[in-house]
Amino acid sequence: KQKIETLPDPFSMVEKELQPFSDSIKELVSTDQPILSMAAKHFFEKRHGKRFRPTIIQLIAKAVAACHPEEIEGDRWEYSGASKIGMEGGKVTVGNHQGSDVWRKQAQLGQIVEMIHVASLIHDDVLDEADTRRGGEAVHKLYSNKVAVLAGDYLLARASVLLARLENTAVVQIMATALESLVAGEIMQLKSSPDELLQMESYLRKSYYKTASLICYACRSVALLGGHAYGSTVATACEEFGFHMGLAFQIQDDILDFTAAASILGKPALADMSLGLSTAPILYAAQEFPHLRPLVKRRFKEQGDKQTALEALYSSDTAMDKAKDLAQFHAQKAVDALLRLPPSEARDALLRLTYVVITRKK
Ligand code: FPP
Ligand code: FPP
Ligand code: MG
Ligand code: MG
Image (cartoon, rainbow, N blue to C red; front, side):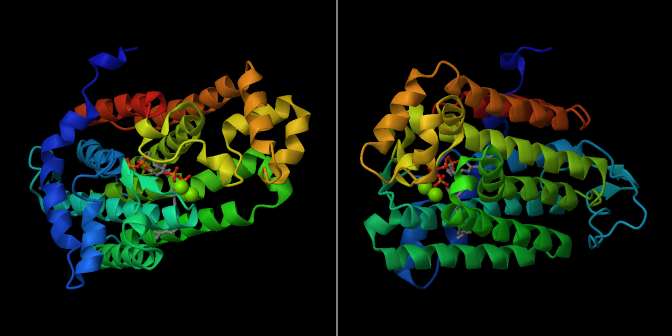
Protein backbone atom coordinates (compact mmCIF):
# COMPACT_ATOMS: atom_id res chain seq x y z
CA LYS A 1 0.00 0.00 0.00
CA GLN A 2 1.18 3.44 -0.96
CA LYS A 3 1.66 6.23 1.56
CA ILE A 4 -1.12 8.83 1.37
CA GLU A 5 1.35 11.73 0.96
CA THR A 6 2.84 10.16 -2.14
CA LEU A 7 -0.51 10.34 -3.94
CA PRO A 8 -1.26 13.39 -6.09
CA ASP A 9 -2.90 16.33 -4.30
CA PRO A 10 -6.57 16.43 -5.34
CA PHE A 11 -7.06 20.18 -4.95
CA SER A 12 -3.97 21.24 -6.89
CA MET A 13 -4.77 18.74 -9.63
CA VAL A 14 -8.00 20.57 -10.47
CA GLU A 15 -6.98 24.06 -9.38
CA LYS A 16 -6.55 25.36 -12.92
CA GLU A 17 -9.81 23.87 -14.03
CA LEU A 18 -11.73 25.35 -11.16
CA GLN A 19 -10.27 28.82 -11.74
CA PRO A 20 -12.78 29.87 -14.41
CA PHE A 21 -15.43 28.23 -12.27
CA SER A 22 -16.01 31.23 -10.00
CA ASP A 23 -16.07 33.75 -12.83
CA SER A 24 -18.55 31.89 -14.92
CA ILE A 25 -20.71 30.92 -11.98
CA LYS A 26 -21.07 34.62 -11.16
CA GLU A 27 -22.45 35.18 -14.63
CA LEU A 28 -24.64 32.14 -14.38
CA VAL A 29 -26.35 33.46 -11.27
CA SER A 30 -26.75 37.08 -12.30
CA THR A 31 -30.30 38.30 -12.71
CA ASP A 32 -32.01 41.62 -13.24
CA GLN A 33 -33.12 41.34 -9.60
CA PRO A 34 -30.06 42.87 -7.89
CA ILE A 35 -31.00 41.61 -4.44
CA LEU A 36 -31.07 38.01 -5.62
CA SER A 37 -27.83 38.18 -7.54
CA MET A 38 -26.22 39.88 -4.58
CA ALA A 39 -27.32 37.18 -2.18
CA ALA A 40 -26.30 34.44 -4.56
CA LYS A 41 -22.99 35.94 -5.72
CA HIS A 42 -22.02 36.43 -2.15
CA PHE A 43 -21.61 32.69 -1.81
CA PHE A 44 -19.60 32.16 -4.95
CA GLU A 45 -17.03 34.90 -4.52
CA LYS A 46 -15.03 35.26 -1.35
CA ARG A 47 -17.01 32.71 0.57
CA HIS A 48 -16.77 29.86 -1.83
CA GLY A 49 -16.30 27.12 0.77
CA LYS A 50 -14.16 24.05 0.47
CA ARG A 51 -15.35 23.13 -3.03
CA PHE A 52 -15.26 19.46 -2.22
CA ARG A 53 -18.03 18.68 -4.68
CA PRO A 54 -16.66 20.40 -7.79
CA THR A 55 -13.24 18.91 -6.98
CA ILE A 56 -14.69 15.41 -6.77
CA ILE A 57 -16.64 15.91 -9.98
CA GLN A 58 -13.61 17.12 -11.96
CA LEU A 59 -11.52 14.22 -10.69
CA ILE A 60 -14.21 11.65 -11.47
CA ALA A 61 -14.46 13.16 -14.95
CA LYS A 62 -10.75 12.57 -15.46
CA ALA A 63 -10.87 9.12 -13.94
CA VAL A 64 -13.70 7.92 -16.18
CA ALA A 65 -12.02 9.39 -19.25
CA ALA A 66 -9.22 6.94 -18.61
CA CYS A 67 -11.34 3.96 -19.55
CA HIS A 68 -13.36 2.68 -22.48
CA PRO A 69 -17.13 2.73 -22.24
CA GLU A 70 -18.38 -0.85 -22.23
CA GLU A 71 -21.24 -1.87 -24.49
CA ILE A 72 -24.30 -2.82 -22.53
CA GLU A 73 -27.21 -4.40 -24.27
CA GLY A 74 -30.66 -3.07 -23.50
CA ASP A 75 -29.31 -0.44 -21.17
CA ARG A 76 -32.37 1.27 -19.81
CA TRP A 77 -31.24 4.83 -20.37
CA GLU A 78 -30.90 6.82 -23.52
CA TYR A 79 -27.74 8.77 -23.42
CA SER A 80 -28.18 10.88 -26.51
CA GLY A 81 -25.15 9.56 -28.30
CA ALA A 82 -22.88 10.64 -25.50
CA SER A 83 -20.92 7.45 -25.88
CA LYS A 84 -19.63 8.73 -29.17
CA ILE A 85 -18.56 12.14 -27.96
CA GLY A 86 -14.96 12.33 -26.87
CA MET A 87 -14.12 9.20 -28.81
CA GLU A 88 -12.38 9.06 -32.12
CA GLY A 89 -12.44 5.90 -34.13
CA GLY A 90 -13.49 3.96 -31.08
CA LYS A 91 -10.54 5.23 -29.08
CA VAL A 92 -11.22 7.33 -26.00
CA THR A 93 -9.42 10.61 -26.44
CA VAL A 94 -8.07 10.91 -22.96
CA GLY A 95 -5.43 13.42 -23.96
CA ASN A 96 -8.05 15.71 -25.47
CA HIS A 97 -10.44 15.26 -22.65
CA GLN A 98 -9.96 18.79 -21.40
CA GLY A 99 -11.58 21.20 -23.85
CA SER A 100 -13.84 18.56 -25.35
CA ASP A 101 -17.60 18.82 -25.38
CA VAL A 102 -17.82 16.04 -22.82
CA TRP A 103 -15.42 17.83 -20.54
CA ARG A 104 -17.40 21.09 -20.82
CA LYS A 105 -20.60 19.32 -19.81
CA GLN A 106 -18.95 17.57 -16.91
CA ALA A 107 -17.51 20.87 -15.68
CA GLN A 108 -20.97 22.40 -15.97
CA LEU A 109 -22.36 19.60 -13.88
CA GLY A 110 -19.81 20.60 -11.22
CA GLN A 111 -21.21 24.13 -11.26
CA ILE A 112 -24.77 22.87 -11.15
CA VAL A 113 -24.00 20.70 -8.14
CA GLU A 114 -22.30 23.58 -6.31
CA MET A 115 -25.34 25.78 -7.05
CA ILE A 116 -27.68 23.14 -5.65
CA HIS A 117 -25.41 22.75 -2.65
CA VAL A 118 -25.34 26.49 -1.95
CA ALA A 119 -29.12 26.74 -2.44
CA SER A 120 -29.57 23.98 0.12
CA LEU A 121 -27.19 25.69 2.59
CA ILE A 122 -29.05 29.01 2.28
CA HIS A 123 -32.34 27.26 3.00
CA ASP A 124 -30.79 25.04 5.65
CA ASP A 125 -29.61 28.05 7.63
CA VAL A 126 -33.16 29.41 7.66
CA LEU A 127 -34.53 26.05 8.84
CA ASP A 128 -31.77 25.59 11.42
CA GLU A 129 -31.82 29.27 12.47
CA ALA A 130 -28.05 29.25 12.05
CA ASP A 131 -26.60 32.76 11.91
CA THR A 132 -23.20 32.02 10.42
CA ARG A 133 -21.95 30.16 7.37
CA ARG A 134 -18.56 29.94 5.73
CA GLY A 135 -17.09 32.25 8.32
CA GLY A 136 -19.60 35.08 7.84
CA GLU A 137 -23.21 35.94 8.28
CA ALA A 138 -25.77 33.63 6.74
CA VAL A 139 -27.84 35.05 3.88
CA HIS A 140 -30.96 35.30 6.04
CA LYS A 141 -29.01 37.40 8.53
CA LEU A 142 -27.44 39.61 5.88
CA TYR A 143 -30.80 40.22 4.24
CA SER A 144 -33.94 38.53 5.54
CA ASN A 145 -35.67 35.17 5.59
CA LYS A 146 -37.71 36.18 2.56
CA VAL A 147 -34.64 37.02 0.52
CA ALA A 148 -32.93 33.79 1.66
CA VAL A 149 -35.89 31.66 0.60
CA LEU A 150 -36.06 33.38 -2.77
CA ALA A 151 -32.30 33.35 -3.31
CA GLY A 152 -32.26 29.59 -2.69
CA ASP A 153 -35.25 29.08 -4.98
CA TYR A 154 -33.61 31.21 -7.63
CA LEU A 155 -30.35 29.25 -7.51
CA LEU A 156 -32.30 26.04 -7.75
CA ALA A 157 -34.20 27.37 -10.75
CA ARG A 158 -30.97 28.44 -12.46
CA ALA A 159 -29.44 25.06 -11.73
CA SER A 160 -32.43 23.38 -13.36
CA VAL A 161 -32.09 25.47 -16.51
CA LEU A 162 -28.39 24.63 -16.77
CA LEU A 163 -29.13 20.98 -16.14
CA ALA A 164 -31.66 20.90 -18.99
CA ARG A 165 -29.05 22.51 -21.25
CA LEU A 166 -26.83 19.47 -20.85
CA GLU A 167 -29.37 17.80 -23.13
CA ASN A 168 -29.02 14.45 -21.49
CA THR A 169 -32.36 13.08 -20.31
CA ALA A 170 -30.84 10.41 -18.09
CA VAL A 171 -28.68 12.96 -16.28
CA VAL A 172 -31.64 15.31 -15.82
CA GLN A 173 -33.65 12.47 -14.36
CA ILE A 174 -30.86 11.39 -12.02
CA MET A 175 -30.12 14.90 -10.79
CA ALA A 176 -33.82 15.66 -10.32
CA THR A 177 -33.96 12.58 -8.10
CA ALA A 178 -31.01 13.99 -6.14
CA LEU A 179 -33.01 17.16 -5.47
CA GLU A 180 -35.95 15.12 -4.33
CA SER A 181 -33.63 13.22 -1.96
CA LEU A 182 -32.28 16.41 -0.39
CA VAL A 183 -35.74 17.55 0.53
CA ALA A 184 -36.74 14.04 1.66
CA GLY A 185 -33.71 14.00 3.99
CA GLU A 186 -34.68 17.30 5.59
CA ILE A 187 -38.26 16.16 6.06
CA MET A 188 -37.08 12.88 7.56
CA GLN A 189 -34.94 14.83 9.99
CA LEU A 190 -37.87 17.07 10.94
CA LYS A 191 -40.42 14.30 11.30
CA SER A 192 -38.42 11.46 12.91
CA SER A 193 -40.37 9.57 15.56
CA PRO A 194 -38.84 9.20 19.03
CA ASP A 195 -37.81 5.63 18.23
CA GLU A 196 -36.25 6.63 14.94
CA LEU A 197 -34.24 9.31 16.72
CA LEU A 198 -32.45 6.52 18.58
CA GLN A 199 -31.77 4.30 15.60
CA MET A 200 -28.41 4.30 13.90
CA GLU A 201 -30.12 3.03 10.78
CA SER A 202 -32.48 6.02 10.58
CA TYR A 203 -29.55 8.35 11.15
CA LEU A 204 -27.64 6.78 8.27
CA ARG A 205 -30.64 6.74 5.97
CA LYS A 206 -31.31 10.39 6.66
CA SER A 207 -27.61 11.19 6.11
CA TYR A 208 -27.74 9.44 2.79
CA TYR A 209 -30.73 11.50 1.68
CA LYS A 210 -29.64 14.87 2.91
CA THR A 211 -25.94 14.62 2.06
CA ALA A 212 -24.65 11.61 0.19
CA SER A 213 -27.38 11.52 -2.48
CA LEU A 214 -26.23 14.71 -4.21
CA ILE A 215 -22.64 13.64 -4.63
CA CYS A 216 -23.58 10.04 -5.34
CA TYR A 217 -25.98 10.91 -8.18
CA ALA A 218 -23.56 13.53 -9.45
CA CYS A 219 -20.78 10.94 -9.69
CA ARG A 220 -22.96 8.60 -11.71
CA SER A 221 -24.02 11.51 -13.95
CA VAL A 222 -20.39 12.39 -14.66
CA ALA A 223 -19.77 8.82 -15.80
CA LEU A 224 -22.85 8.98 -18.05
CA LEU A 225 -21.74 12.28 -19.55
CA GLY A 226 -18.39 10.60 -20.14
CA GLY A 227 -20.10 8.05 -22.36
CA HIS A 228 -20.44 5.19 -19.89
CA ALA A 229 -23.73 3.34 -19.89
CA TYR A 230 -26.12 3.51 -16.95
CA GLY A 231 -25.51 -0.06 -15.86
CA SER A 232 -21.78 -0.11 -16.61
CA THR A 233 -19.19 -1.14 -14.05
CA VAL A 234 -17.68 2.32 -14.25
CA ALA A 235 -20.94 4.22 -13.61
CA THR A 236 -21.81 1.93 -10.70
CA ALA A 237 -18.34 2.25 -9.17
CA CYS A 238 -18.63 6.04 -9.40
CA GLU A 239 -22.02 6.03 -7.71
CA GLU A 240 -20.82 3.74 -4.95
CA PHE A 241 -17.81 5.93 -4.40
CA GLY A 242 -20.09 8.98 -4.05
CA PHE A 243 -22.43 7.14 -1.71
CA HIS A 244 -19.72 6.14 0.75
CA MET A 245 -17.75 9.35 0.35
CA GLY A 246 -20.90 11.34 1.14
CA LEU A 247 -21.66 9.27 4.23
CA ALA A 248 -18.06 9.49 5.46
CA PHE A 249 -18.23 13.24 4.88
CA GLN A 250 -21.45 13.65 6.87
CA ILE A 251 -20.30 11.46 9.76
CA GLN A 252 -17.09 13.50 9.98
CA ASP A 253 -19.23 16.65 9.84
CA ASP A 254 -21.26 15.37 12.77
CA ILE A 255 -18.09 14.55 14.73
CA LEU A 256 -16.74 18.04 14.09
CA ASP A 257 -19.97 19.51 15.46
CA PHE A 258 -18.73 18.21 18.84
CA THR A 259 -14.98 18.53 18.50
CA ALA A 260 -14.32 21.73 16.53
CA ALA A 261 -14.76 25.39 17.43
CA ALA A 262 -17.28 27.56 15.59
CA SER A 263 -14.46 29.94 14.65
CA ILE A 264 -12.76 27.13 12.75
CA LEU A 265 -15.91 25.66 11.25
CA GLY A 266 -17.16 29.05 10.08
CA LYS A 267 -20.63 27.99 11.25
CA PRO A 268 -22.15 27.32 14.68
CA ALA A 269 -20.68 24.38 16.64
CA LEU A 270 -22.60 22.09 19.00
CA ALA A 271 -25.56 22.89 16.81
CA ASP A 272 -27.06 19.45 16.25
CA MET A 273 -28.23 18.79 19.81
CA SER A 274 -29.74 22.26 19.97
CA LEU A 275 -31.75 21.28 16.91
CA GLY A 276 -32.88 18.16 18.74
CA LEU A 277 -30.76 15.90 16.58
CA SER A 278 -28.67 12.95 17.65
CA THR A 279 -25.82 12.02 15.38
CA ALA A 280 -23.32 9.13 15.44
CA PRO A 281 -21.30 10.15 18.54
CA ILE A 282 -24.42 10.61 20.71
CA LEU A 283 -26.09 7.49 19.34
CA TYR A 284 -23.06 5.42 20.34
CA ALA A 285 -23.02 7.08 23.76
CA ALA A 286 -26.72 6.23 24.18
CA GLN A 287 -25.95 2.58 23.42
CA GLU A 288 -23.50 2.65 26.30
CA PHE A 289 -25.51 4.82 28.72
CA PRO A 290 -29.21 3.90 28.85
CA HIS A 291 -30.05 7.11 30.73
CA LEU A 292 -29.38 9.07 27.54
CA ARG A 293 -32.09 7.30 25.57
CA PRO A 294 -35.09 9.26 26.88
CA LEU A 295 -33.16 12.50 26.28
CA VAL A 296 -32.51 11.56 22.68
CA LYS A 297 -36.16 10.65 22.21
CA ARG A 298 -37.39 13.96 23.55
CA ARG A 299 -34.88 15.86 21.39
CA PHE A 300 -33.05 17.27 24.46
CA LYS A 301 -36.04 19.48 25.16
CA GLU A 302 -35.78 19.61 28.93
CA GLN A 303 -33.41 21.80 30.79
CA GLY A 304 -30.02 20.21 31.41
CA ASP A 305 -30.56 17.51 28.77
CA LYS A 306 -27.85 18.75 26.46
CA GLN A 307 -25.37 19.08 29.31
CA THR A 308 -26.10 15.55 30.54
CA ALA A 309 -25.67 14.12 27.07
CA LEU A 310 -22.42 15.98 26.49
CA GLU A 311 -20.98 14.83 29.79
CA ALA A 312 -21.89 11.24 29.00
CA LEU A 313 -20.32 11.54 25.55
CA TYR A 314 -17.09 12.96 26.92
CA SER A 315 -16.93 10.40 29.72
CA SER A 316 -17.28 7.53 27.26
CA ASP A 317 -14.04 5.91 26.16
CA THR A 318 -15.57 4.46 23.04
CA ALA A 319 -18.43 6.58 21.63
CA MET A 320 -16.31 9.07 19.71
CA ASP A 321 -13.94 6.36 18.49
CA LYS A 322 -16.84 4.30 17.23
CA ALA A 323 -18.10 7.32 15.28
CA LYS A 324 -14.64 7.77 13.80
CA ASP A 325 -14.55 4.07 12.92
CA LEU A 326 -17.88 4.43 11.15
CA ALA A 327 -16.53 7.31 9.05
CA GLN A 328 -13.43 5.23 8.38
CA PHE A 329 -15.56 2.25 7.35
CA HIS A 330 -17.35 4.29 4.70
CA ALA A 331 -14.10 5.88 3.57
CA GLN A 332 -12.69 2.39 3.03
CA LYS A 333 -15.79 1.42 1.02
CA ALA A 334 -15.29 4.55 -1.07
CA VAL A 335 -11.70 3.49 -1.68
CA ASP A 336 -12.82 -0.04 -2.65
CA ALA A 337 -15.20 1.45 -5.23
CA LEU A 338 -12.44 3.66 -6.65
CA LEU A 339 -10.13 0.70 -7.02
CA ARG A 340 -12.63 -0.81 -9.45
CA LEU A 341 -11.78 2.03 -11.86
CA PRO A 342 -8.68 1.66 -14.01
CA PRO A 343 -5.53 3.25 -12.56
CA SER A 344 -5.06 6.96 -13.25
CA GLU A 345 -3.60 10.02 -11.55
CA ALA A 346 -7.13 11.32 -10.96
CA ARG A 347 -8.14 8.10 -9.29
CA ASP A 348 -5.14 8.35 -6.99
CA ALA A 349 -6.04 11.95 -6.14
CA LEU A 350 -9.55 10.76 -5.24
CA LEU A 351 -8.05 8.11 -2.98
CA ARG A 352 -6.18 10.86 -1.19
CA LEU A 353 -9.29 13.05 -1.02
CA THR A 354 -11.12 10.25 0.74
CA TYR A 355 -8.48 10.37 3.43
CA VAL A 356 -8.72 14.16 3.60
CA VAL A 357 -12.48 13.95 4.18
CA ILE A 358 -12.20 11.82 7.32
CA THR A 359 -9.22 13.67 8.76
CA ARG A 360 -10.41 17.20 8.00
CA LYS A 361 -10.67 19.63 10.89
CA LYS A 362 -13.26 21.93 9.37
C1 FPP B 1 -21.74 21.97 4.18
O1 FPP B 1 -20.94 21.50 3.21
C2 FPP B 1 -22.89 21.05 4.11
C3 FPP B 1 -23.04 20.10 4.95
C4 FPP B 1 -22.18 19.95 6.12
C5 FPP B 1 -24.06 19.15 4.72
C6 FPP B 1 -23.43 17.92 4.72
C7 FPP B 1 -23.18 17.42 3.42
C8 FPP B 1 -22.01 17.31 2.91
C9 FPP B 1 -20.99 17.95 3.61
C10 FPP B 1 -21.76 16.50 1.80
C11 FPP B 1 -20.92 16.23 0.99
C12 FPP B 1 -20.34 15.16 0.51
C13 FPP B 1 -19.17 15.15 -0.09
C14 FPP B 1 -18.53 13.87 -0.39
C15 FPP B 1 -18.45 16.36 -0.47
P1 FPP B 1 -19.46 21.83 3.20
O2 FPP B 1 -18.93 21.61 4.58
O3 FPP B 1 -18.83 21.17 2.05
O4 FPP B 1 -19.57 23.36 3.00
P2 FPP B 1 -18.76 24.32 2.13
O5 FPP B 1 -19.27 24.13 0.76
O6 FPP B 1 -19.14 25.62 2.76
O7 FPP B 1 -17.33 23.98 2.30
C1 FPP C 1 -26.88 20.80 5.77
O1 FPP C 1 -27.02 19.93 6.83
C2 FPP C 1 -28.04 20.68 4.85
C3 FPP C 1 -28.16 19.84 3.79
C4 FPP C 1 -27.09 18.93 3.40
C5 FPP C 1 -29.37 19.76 2.96
C6 FPP C 1 -30.37 20.86 3.13
C7 FPP C 1 -31.53 20.66 2.23
C8 FPP C 1 -32.61 21.44 2.24
C9 FPP C 1 -32.72 22.61 3.15
C10 FPP C 1 -33.73 21.13 1.32
C11 FPP C 1 -33.90 22.21 0.28
C12 FPP C 1 -33.09 21.86 -0.87
C13 FPP C 1 -32.79 22.69 -1.90
C14 FPP C 1 -32.03 22.14 -3.03
C15 FPP C 1 -33.16 24.12 -1.94
P1 FPP C 1 -26.69 20.35 8.32
O2 FPP C 1 -27.68 21.36 8.81
O3 FPP C 1 -26.55 19.10 9.07
O4 FPP C 1 -25.25 20.97 8.16
P2 FPP C 1 -24.62 22.33 8.63
O5 FPP C 1 -23.95 22.02 9.91
O6 FPP C 1 -23.62 22.64 7.54
O7 FPP C 1 -25.68 23.35 8.74
MG1 MG D 1 -27.55 23.38 9.35
MG1 MG E 1 -29.78 21.24 8.78
